[in-house]
Length: 330
Ligand SMILES: NC(=O)c1ccc[n+]([C@@H]2O[C@H](COP(=O)([O-])OP(=O)(O)OC[C@H]3O[C@@H](n4cnc5c(N)ncnc54)[C@H](OP(=O)(O)O)[C@@H]3O)[C@@H](O)[C@H]2O)c1
Image (cartoon, rainbow, N blue to C red):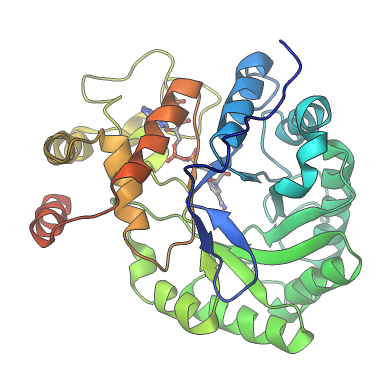
């Protein structure tokens, strides 16, 4: 592959939204490395996806300690690509990582203790070859660790200069409010919340989005395409190379069931009438709300990335389209 030079037009078409009440702007689309960047994946394809993303104004790449497989390999591969292609652009990038899920054996490699969070970030920085990440997240709530301890660890990490901002993921509305109050007191406000949110899974609408709004916290929904279900890919069964078919994919074949696909077929018709692919409509549907800062997609090819970027050309929905979508989703 030729040496990468970023496109001169990379900032021509992307819109950047303010993340909560912070100073940080994020692109309307961000790219996650949960799947497709591990050692089981094609390195050349992974690299091409990252190049194209940055060339199109996607400045934010999201990782976690356990992404792969094997766990840790997405950070290692990202670190390699960073070194080969993106070092001159480090200050144009927002790189995030997380800890909170099972990462190493024994009692200190999981959940939310200060011990785990700080050690895990040190490991992530080594794997990526970075001095600091832009955002460090607690990956999931941990009811057995005092929330003061987990938030204290996030604050400590910022004070150590190992992360510029902190966030939380999958915390409920109540837990988020508590975490936010603690972090504000410590002087490290919560920048962002990363919840699962898409047309099929709308739990965040029952309180979380309001808390984020009132606390001035940004929102970056993950799995906006329900891991691929909200695209046209499963309309005629499960294709061989899809996430549902792969043994390393987190999407189970049972999740791609007739009941869901019946809805997806109808949603696909609505998307067609809007002149969009279903993936584009699913992304636009999230971005119609200005409480959503950025939508965090995953892609297994450059083609999917370009398709998804097309969503940004039409984020408007008529009332009747929204009502139709709501009715179909019931
Ligand atoms: N905080 C958390 O707990 C958490 C949890 C999950 C994810 N995340 C983050 O969110 C990111 C995105 O999650 P996700 O990968 O589940 O997102 P997603 O966008 O819902 O699903 C991505 C998958 O959908 C398929 N796809 C994407 N665009 C397509 C298109 N235009 N046409 C057809 N198929 C398309 C591809 O699957 P195929 O492989 O089948 O082609 C792709 O890998 C992750 O990388 C990670 O950074 C965070």
